[in-house]
Length: 171
Image (cartoon, rainbow, N blue to C red; front, side, top):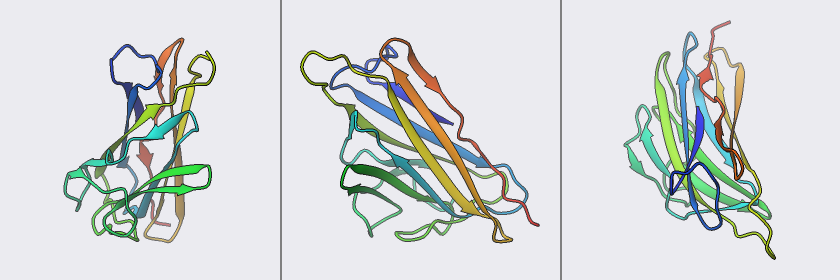
């Protein structure tokens, strides 16, 4: 699942408010999901809150905060021009450069925060759409991709969209 919650709990994205994104998943396939990498590209309507990435749980990874810097743990925040991306490498054996393994039935959960940008000249906060993609490889070498979206709308509140099933099957 990929969900978003707002700081004051009213279900609306408001100017300068902190939003918390939670991403959960499970390997529901037969066999391992290997080389697991989760990437979340931030929309230009939000700004990443430095130091807010954390692992709630993942096999082989200590729960808690991770750094924003590349090369020192399983996560990083990457800015490449206008593209801003959160990256988590998950599963047993994950490190600063490679994703690890989720065995059949194993789960993960991670979080990070963003701040809603203040729109220009009297404009309202627009709907905020946020996309994530998780990739893995089966034991047979088949690549699997799953996408998830979280949406928070100033007029209608959050709409969670599922990013939860990984099927890694042997061929």
